[in-house]
Image 1 (cartoon, rainbow, N blue to C red):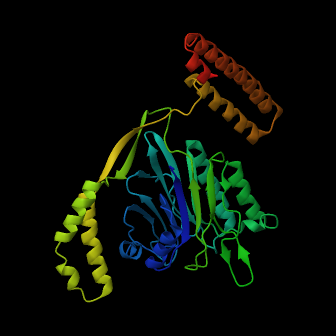
Image 2 (image 1 turned 90 degrees about the vertical axis):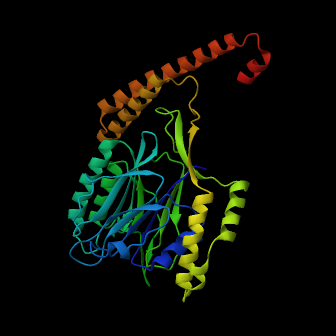
Image 3 (image 1 turned 60 degrees about the horizontal axis):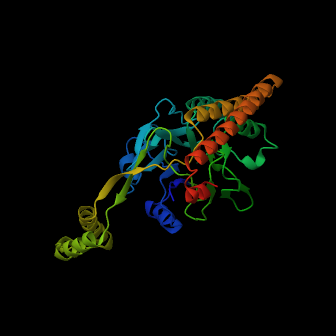
Amino acid sequence: KSRRLIWRHESAIPATAGLLVLNSSHLSFTVLAISETWANEHNEQFLVLHIPGYSRHLQSRTDKSGGGVALFIKDHLLVSVRNDLNVFNDDISELMFVDITIALHDKVTVGVIYRPPGGNLSSFNDHYCKLLDKLSSTKSKCFIAGDFNINLLNYETHSETEKFLNNVFSHFQYPTIIRPTRFGSTSSSLIDNIFANNINDDYHAGILISDTSDHLPVYYISKTKMYNTHESKYFVKNYRDINNNNVEYLSQRLADYDWGELKSCNDVHSAYNSFLSGFLSLYNECCPTIRKKIKVRNCHKPWITPGILTSVKKKNNLYKKWLKKRTDISLSKYKRYKNKLTDVMRRAEKLYYENRFVELKNDAKNTWKLI
């Protein structure tokens, strides 16, 4: 299945431990969102690990320790940094947002946020509301992962937490994690989350059990096919060219490879790095990555025209306006438009089948298929 996956985890842990969490999950994540990297502009190049197969996008602190956020994204995807959203203030919040091109002309906005626990929550709510306003104006799918240090379990008893959730819901963002993510000896809290604005998405979200940090990693798996059926007939897929001939060629190259440097290593870590470097070099040579254009299958009903699709979008926008305003006028506009659109779609379906039966009047086999 084509899947879009987002994972968020508290960092400030050894790189090997973090990679073990990934390996033990048996899932290949498209996006890794990490908070509290503890990196700054002087040490980020060696403090924040490089993950093979991922591009790295950092927002580090400049004048004090702690904090920092990072996004790791599969390197075959086209990524553009959203500088208009990345307004950095480490006293209020630290964030990194990017646009990811999933298919031709189809983008998804992904962000990671860290809110320091000692920061002013009221100031953060104001800042976050402005951020959501900008995101809402783009009308694209959006996922925001992070450590907000706002316990959503207290929304009924804490006014600023209630205000935070109201901001989220009013911008059509929804929390996908509903269970505690951080546990103390006598308490638990839900302060890590992944917010999504695509409520109709077929997804699975949850928590990974890991003791590498006092925060549990959270994840989001989308099962929705990731290509745009309206603007392109094709989407580009990257895959590893593995066949019998390539595997045999790789076997020969490995047998002929000079492993002298590996044998001269004095410790297991250097030996492993030497082996991995040599193996990956041959693997990429013998089994290269290939980009392939794949035709998109149209999943719409055959009587759904581009004009009807445009009308459906307008109807949905009217419904959103009613949800925001909750007035009799906005409800009346939505219902009138919806009823007209329903009538148009019924007539379009009826006309389609009338024409198809006429076309197949001398073809009994395909007539029964149509029925």
